[in-house]
Image 1: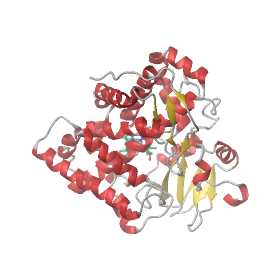
Image 2: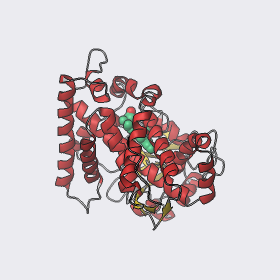
Image 3: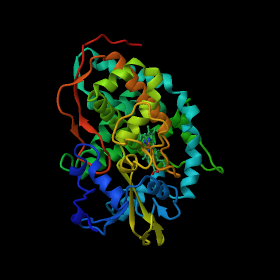
Image 4: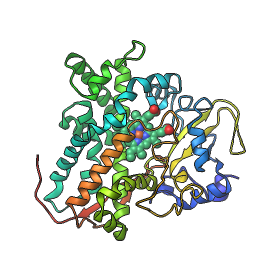
Length: 407
Ligand code: HEM
């Protein structure tokens, strides 16, 4: 069965123009949870949409490699792929396990929890900047700023530099018709150049921050080299940036469109927020897919996969699987259990920053809904034109102006 024959198209950003294509996902899960998808100009790939199958692929890095062809469906020139392989996300064990051991200790739930107050302060400062205006763009002015500011804070670099890094990551992620390749590479170069300076500075004057710990972290007597440090820095900005921004932007839209749910949440924020955050992650699934490459002939859900085939796991589809989630198309604030795969299917690449992400989302949603009790949409949100990351680009909102809290 081909993509053209069934009207399935998971490559066109149009399919994701208004969020996840739930109808396509449903058809795929019911008819071909391991589906051969055509690819204009490419060999095609397997689209995996069933929950158990997504987990199976994620947990078998020895068969489904991240390093062999990278984590995007499209192919990259060899030198670019080589560069991406310096990032933990594009490595396989045992190299991946080595890096994970090197940095993993800095991202545990305990370590992340130590940052709760500081992340809360950052959220307060962002909301202070917009509270007097009475209207703003929730994505640009609020959700987008948080991850860069938080990563600046974690790494121990000035917030002003965090703002510059935010601008640079925006350039990196702009659609090809908005910026040139030169501008994109220049932005990437500025970030890695900046990271190299941070490394030098932290080696000379270590402080109690993530960057200082990263530069001296050791496994078997080995530390991160300058290039490895810069790559990790770049990955942190990227992996923790759009994802968190899109979750917060999309989550707020979904809640504002469901006034009864929002009222319930507001009435019991401490009680409902933990399960709400998990449900928003499931419902929003900011990362659309991750690709792997089969490194040997294998079988998945009864389908034969050949060595060299590309295999893409669709997290939003797995998170909507009715075999696992009751009424998956509904937002259920107190859903328990909720073993969603928004942070990955549970294998070695499971999101390193998940605990930080959860704190950022919790702090932002709690403060936003508390400080702006009459927050409302003033226009239709526009959605990101991407087949990789899902979320709104602009969400115009208004609220009664208030005075900054400061602090
Ligand atoms: C809503 C927020 C977030 C979502 C939905 C998300 C999702 C993901 C997903 C799907 C993966 C790949 C999992 C796999 O391949 O099995 C991943 C990996 C990763 N994420 Fe996140 N992420 C979020 C926030 C963050 C934050 C805040 C940080 C950093 C502070 C972060 C850092 C990373 C890193 C470093 C990896 C690579 C891990 C590895 O390859 O071992 N993420 N994330």
